[in-house]
Every structure is written in C-alpha cells, then in structure tokens.
Picture 1 (cartoon, rainbow, N blue to C red):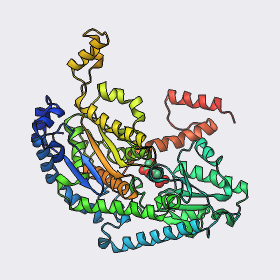
Picture 2 (cartoon, rainbow, N blue to C red; picture 1 turned 30 degrees about the vertical axis):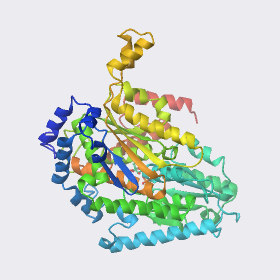
Picture 3 (tube, protein in one colour; picture 1 turned 180 degrees about the vertical axis):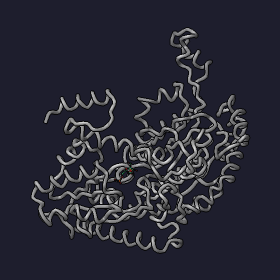
Picture 4 (cartoon, protein in one colour; picture 1 turned 60 degrees about the horizontal axis):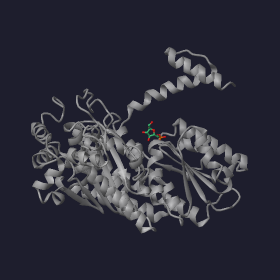
Length: 538
Ligand code: F6P
C-alpha cells in the first residue's frame, strides 16, 4: 500500500502488527464491553463485528482513515449526481431510484416517478386481468430474461420473498445455453406466460438470444402479429431498439445510463419483483433502501453500518492479508444473496488501476463467494476451520425467517451461532490432545483435531426477511462497495475487464460456425475449436 492513496497508514500497520499474536477470544476477556462496543444498527439490521481481530488502536485508526478519505462527503457526491463514474463520464444515481436526494434532482426524479407510475399501472393491469395473454387468459407466470445486473438482483429478491399466495410465479433465465430457457418453458403454458426482456444496453448476446427463442416459442403457440406484444415487456436504455424488436411502445420501460447494471434492481429492471410479489413488496423494498440511505448520510462513521462494513473489509484485505470473503446466510430464502453480492463486489471493485489510471500496489476486492447455511457446513467449512487460506465472512442470521417447524428453524439459528463461535475459538492443541487420547490417537495424530480459530468475521442479524430489511441490507452492501472504492481510489461503476472475452467470443463464434479463421489464434484454442466442430457437424 505504500505510495497508494491510503498511504502511509502507519497506525494501522502498527495495530495489525501488535494484533498478530493476539486471539480474538482474549480481546473479549480483557474488555467486558466488547460485544456492545463493536456493534452498530440500522433499519432492522444489527452488525456485530466484535469477532474481528480488532482492538481500540486499530478501530481508532480506521475511523481516522474514514475521516481522512472524506467518506461522508463521498456519499454526498453520490446522491448529488456528481460525475463519480469518471471513465464513462456519468453520475451513479441508483439512490434516486428509491427517492433519495429527489429534491436535488427534480428532472431526473420526475422521470423516475413517471416510470414507477407506469410500473404500477402495468402491474395492476396484469394482476387485475385487464392485460392478458393472446387467448384472453390471465397471466400466471413471468419469465425474466436478463443477465448480470439484469438478473441477479430481481432473482435474489423474488427467491427471498416468494410465497404461495404470490400473484404470479417468477422464473429467471440468464444463460445463453438453451437448456436454461428450455427447462423453464417446458413447465409453462405460452397462453399465460409473460416475458420481461431486461437489458440496459439491449445488445447483450445472452439476453437477445433467449428473447428470440422465447418469441419463437410464443409464435409457435399462435401468438402472432399484434398478439405477440401482449406477452412482452422490455426494460432498457434503448427503447427505440426494443420497439423495433417488436415490443409495444407502452411496454418499453426506460432505465438510464446513470444507473449501473448491478445497482439497478430498484429501477424497472426489477419489474419482475412487483409482478411476482405484488406492488407493496416492491414499495417496501424501496422504502427500506431509502431509509438505509438516510442512515448512511447521517450516522457518524463509527455508527454508520455501510461505512463500518467497508472499513472492516479494508482492514481485512489490506492489513490482515485476507483475500476471500464468504457470505454465509442462515436463511434458505437468502440463498441467492452470495451470487448477487459477488457481482456487486467483484465487478465493482475487482480493479487493478485507480480511477486516475495508476497501477495499484495493494490488493483490491476479495474473491467473494458463499452459500446458504447449513449446506456449506457439509462441504467447504472444513477448509474454513482447518485450511491454510485466510478468509473473512459475514454470517447473516434473520431472527425471523419463514414460518413453520420451529425446532428446525431453532436448529438453523443454533448452527449459525455455533459457527460464529467455532470460527473464533477453534480447538486448542491441549483440547485436541485430550480428544485424540479419548479416541486412541497418539499425540502427533491428535493434531488432526486442532482448529486454529481466530477467524475474523461479522455477524449480521436481520429482524426478519421482510422487504424493508432486505432493501436496507442490499443498500448497505451497495454503499459498502462504494466506500471501499473511495478508500482504494477506484471507480466502482465501470467494468472494462469483461469486454475482451466478449470480443474474442465474437471471433470464435465465426470460427465455430464456418471453420474459417482470419484472426490470430493460439494452437490450443484452435484445436479445441476444431474438437467442438467435429462433435457438432452441421
Ligand atoms: O458484461 C457485464 C455486464 O455489462 C454487466 O455489467 C451487466 O449487469 C450485464 O452485462 C448485463 O448487461 P445488460 O443489462 O446491458 O444486458
């Protein structure tokens, strides 16, 4: 980090050095107030960060850093539509989609409000049956066709909040592999299926390929001519292109270049959410996110939940050498949260040059991954407990999640808290020796039972998996991502790294199609392309 925008942070380095021989559980023993001190709350969320290898000198130094990097001012720049996406010369105004800062942006706010009104109307028309399929039957299913930010957010929310009484069943198709769409369509009736084609650019190959295949499926069922339009909604910045593709103008909903794809679930990109769950759920989602925006704009750094999340990740990645971050939700409803946060974190902050183009000499975004507890416990937690790679984790525990079978839900919560404690305390050499002896192992073999513990992690408790709390949770992670970008000197709103693969795929598609090649290609890729052609003769 020397020489970078964070340098020099001697106090943090000294604090990390001093803590390198300490154990988190000992920090609890010397500070009776620790559990309460390292905690902050907002909008039904409680972030307990007492089980990080962190003490007062480190925490004070992190707060000083937050101050020196002007995080509150950076948040103001975000909601004030400053051109913070410098490489694309735009603001990043996803907060306006939930009403935050509307007084500062009357014109943009008016188009947001107008689009929300169109979404309400469309949702009402579908639910009331005034908008039907081509045979006059009411819609029963909505299929979202989109990828990346045009898929992961709405998919995650619908899975988290779905119930048996939802107005429509929601399905999500992202992969260009035809299996993805085909598996969904075999279960559906064309007469009662509504498609939402979500693509900010309206040029993403996967989405346009799936949309064309969905259109052909409708045609084949008899939804021809004007009737086809009854089954289609588009959400894009290119409404003219969508119109030319065959979507009725009144079914083409806009988004704007000042909304990043991975920050767009609050826009019409999220219309599958109210279509599937009803408008009140979407409205509460926006309200929860907006309330978290208010918290972020007003709370002091020490009590500012997204800022604390950002400072903890910076501490872990820059000073404690952690390079992966596990998201471990203990609620099956939140199974898709790691996927969503993966794009948010890794596409935003997976960068190696600063916003000014300087090569960074410190690690940026960690590899983010995870899955719902308790499933991961029977898979990769072994590595978390006894492996050699440093990681950090967020254990997410809704206090209320779903209904039914109290004893199973109690067991789930017990596992979440047990893992949190096990990450911290591990099993000492002496305890491993005793356990080994009781099982007939000698001293050397008993080392297998030793768990180092001292694994820094956060526990995030949510009051419930309600739309409000979920909106707040997602907004908190969005702002965490932005604050980290500010701390690291990055632009989190572009993603130039994904372009090269798309370009080469275009070339290779031609080669796989015709066998002809007019571009430079290595022998290994060429051989693989020929193997594919041989297995797929025309
Ligand atoms: O290729 C990456 C990406 O541009 C993401 O940033 C985006 O969320 C996704 O593709 C989908 O883009 P679009 O909404 O334009 O189809």
